[in-house]
Image (cartoon, rainbow, N blue to C red; front, side, top):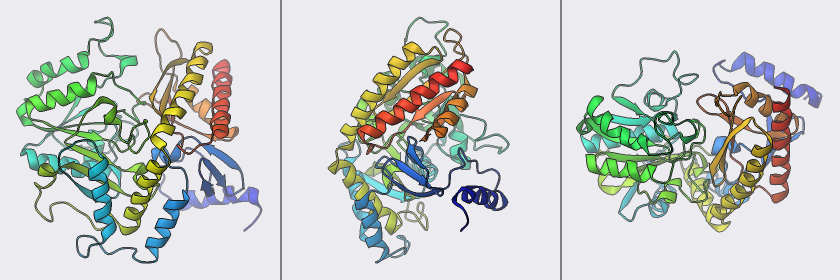
Length: 439
C-alpha cells in the first residue's frame, strides 16, 4: 500500500485522472472510516465532522442499529424493483412517514433516490393534481442540480451557469433574508413586505390562477441558513390557500430532528400539502421521499411516477432504523441543546469580532455570516475560505454557504459528545478570530 503519508497524494492523482473535473472537493481528505462525529482518513488523522455529509448524517456516522439493519437486509434482498415485485420495508417506511409528518389528514408516500428527485416528483404531482403548470420558488433557494431543480434554485454560480436553457414556468420571488432585507432602506423594521410583495407579483408577473404550487425550504440551506420571521411561513400557506396554490415544503436538509423538531415546519404550525425529504432520512444510504395529502398523491395514474431504484430495500431498512434511532435517543431535544450552547458561544464571539455580521439558526442548524464591514454588510467570502482552511488544519471540518459565499454553516451531528462540541467550537472561535485579525 505504500507509506501512509503518500496515500492521499496517490489517491488525489488517481482521482484527478479518473473523475470529471466538475466534481469539486472542499478538502483533500480521503476517508478510511468514521464513527459518530469523527472521521479518520487514510493517513489515520482524525477530524471532527461539523458538516455531517451536508446534513445527511444527523444520527452521525455508522450508528450501530442502522448498520445492523442494513447488514440484515443485505443478506435477504438487495434489490427487486418495487414496481414489479414488492417488499415490506417500503410499505413500513411509507407508513412511518405518513404518521410522523405534519398534518392530521390522510397521507401517502412515494420513494426516490435523491433530494432533487423528490423535488422533481413533488412538482410533477402538484402540476398533475392542480391541472396547472406554474411553480413559485424563492431567491436564495437550493432544490437540486437536475434541470427542474436547477431552475428552481436561485444561485447562478456554480449551479446554473452554462447549463441553460432552464425549465419554463418557474417564477422567483424574494425570500425572507432579514439580514439583507430588500425593503430595509425604504421601510423601517420588518413589515413583512416580502409577503405584501405577492399582491404586486400576482398583478405584475403572473396570475395566481396559473400557479400550481409554491415550494420553499423552511430554513434556506445553501442560500445561507436563512431563518424566516415567525409570520412568514404561515403567511405563505395562507396565500396559497386563498389562491388555490399547493404548498410544498422542501425538508431535504431541515428534516429529521436537525432544527429541534422532526421537521422544521412544525416550528410554525404549518401543514404542507406535499413535503420532500432526503439526506438524513436513512443515515447516508441514498433515499428520498415525497409525502403528502392522499387525495393529491393519488392523482397520478399507476406508472406516472416511480423509478427502478426508488425505495430500494437496503435504503428502506436504513430509513426505518434511522427514524427509530432519532426517536429512541431523543435527538430532537439534543438538537435544541446543541443549538443553545452553540448560539450562546457564537453570540459572545460576535461581540468580540466585528467580522461577524449575523449569527442565526434554529436547533442545530446554524449559520455565521461574515462581512468586511458591519455597516455596509459587504460580504467577506474570502474570509470564510480562510476560516474553513484554518479549521481543517486544526482538525475540524466545516463548510461555507450563502448566495455570496460568506456564510459558515454548521451541521453538527446530533450524536456529538459534549467534549467534542466544546473542542470543535473552540477551534472555530480561534480560527474566526485568527483569520479576521489578518484579513
